[in-house]
Structure formats: structure tokens, C-alpha cells
Amino acid sequence: MGIQEQYKALQEEVGKVCESCGRDPRDVMLVAVSKTVGADEIVEASQAGALDFGENRPDDLLEKYDAMPQARWHFIGNVQSRRISDIVPKSFLIHSVYKVDHLAKIDAAAKEAGKIQNMLLEINSGEESKGGLDPDMSFGFLAAARRLPNIRMCGLMTMAPQGDLDVARACFANLRALRDEILDMGVVDDTYFNELSMGMSEDWREAIAEGATIIRVGRAIFSGDFA
Ligand SMILES: *Cc1c(COP(=O)(O)O)cnc(C)c1O
Image (cartoon, rainbow, N blue to C red):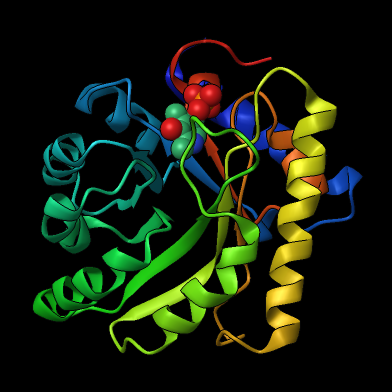
């Protein structure tokens, strides 16, 4: 299958999985993670209907944004302080913020760019090698973010450990419970704080079953690993 066929097959499968768990497919955004491919493959995916693309390196984000500024670009990689002013003007949504120290800089960069920056708080799902904040620390982070006028916190993101779908599903259930707890505590603006960015090529089905509103899929679209 080519990229267009794979994208369409994935979309169809997403629809079926949503149906099987009683969810509306329009409530699940599919972000095509294009970090391993170039502009030609991105154009192909967009021809199949892809609107949202994810990148994890600032230089790639800038280059691919310029190749297709009409798409919505998601930054899903490690945020480095010195690259914030590059990332912010190009990002529709930054999925991977978790350092309180970065908030003021993102707020300033958003102001400079004349935008409100949509962001998700990345939560660590137990692997020390991965980024993300300890769930217990999320309340303090969100209270700090709320004081900044050019930042909009839209929800949570996590990466589950790979290799065991039951473990992944438990991580996703925990993320949903954390979002609901945060909403109950009233530390965020509940008009926006509803997104759960969780699920990749291997585990997006489990993520949808646990309430994902955004799935981030790379290999299943771009490298023929669609299963
Ligand atoms: C690469 C990546 C993905 C996509 O992973 P696949 O296994 O290729 O679907 C999703 N989220 C993040 C943060 C990534 O870095």
C-alpha cells in the first residue's frame, strides 16, 4: 500500500474502533507523525485527507511548515528553552510541555507572534528515560500556566511504554482519570482542558477505548507497518 492508501485504511479503522466503543470518530483527531519522512510523503498524506502533522525536531518543524503552511503542525518532541521562539510561531499545538521554567518563555514567544499558544501538559507514564511530569506535580504546573495570558492549556499527553498493550491501556486510563481529577479541582479553564493526546501506531486502539481525543500515528501511515 502507498501512503494515501495507508492513511485512508487507518482512518477507516479508526472509525470502526470508535464505533465499537460507542465514540464519534469526529471526536478523535488523527495527527500524522511525519518525523521520519520528507515533504513528498507529507503531500501524499495530505492528498488522502491528512490535515494535522506532528514533528519532534525544531529544524524539521520549521522546514516542513514552510513546505506546507496550510497544514496544522503539532510539536511533539523535547522542548528546549533555546528553541521555544522557533517552535511557537509554527505550532498549532505543542504536546510536550512539562517544565514550569518554560512557561514564561512560551508565553512571551506567543505574545510576540500575536497568538495564544495551545499546549498540552506531558505526563510521564513511569519510564525515566522519557519526558513528562510526575502526575502529582501537574496541579502546580497548571496553576502556574493559568496565570499566563498567552498560553492555553488544552489537556494532557503521554507516551505509554511499548510492548505490552495491557500496560499501555492502564497508562491511558490513568491519564483520563488525571484529566478528570484536574477538571474536578477547578485548576484549569474547562472550556479548553479536554484533550487527551495518547496512542501511537502500536497502541492507538487501546487509547481510543480509554478516551483519546488525539492519536499520534507515524509508522502505520508512513512506513507500511499498518496492522
Ligand atoms: C514518533 C512519535 C509518535 C509516533 O510513533 P509511531 O510508533 O511511529 O506511530 C508519537 N508520539 C511521539 C511523541 C513520537 O515521538
